[in-house]
Length: 141
Image (cartoon, rainbow, N blue to C red):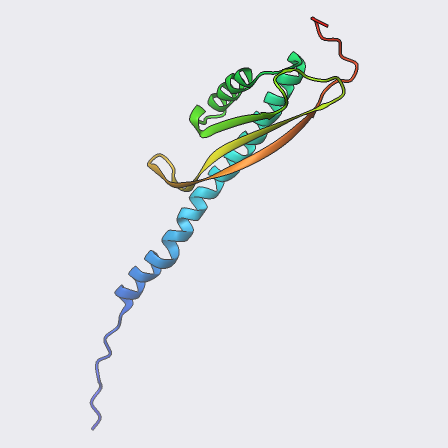
């Protein structure tokens, strides 16, 4: 006669490990990817708007650039301190026919759990070059 040996399974342990090591990290990545994309698009929009504002005014004004960036970031749902702006130009009047380069750095969370918290961070910088109108006549020239 053969005795059947009971085979105990580890299904409960495998299920917990499978969820903990596979499903949970993938779910966190799926929840975080839209945040990265949204903030990158916001950074590009802010850089374009800061560049346009500076070239229309005709002056390289860091303070005005920070105000525009702060307003744009709030309008796009970001905190103002999540965005940093840097203009690559000499202070004062912009030269006709030149170019203005705007660098916008946006803070992105490493992991974002919507409505709960953000964990870790990294920074993404967008560079936008705005041509300055060669035929524009500025008011005080």
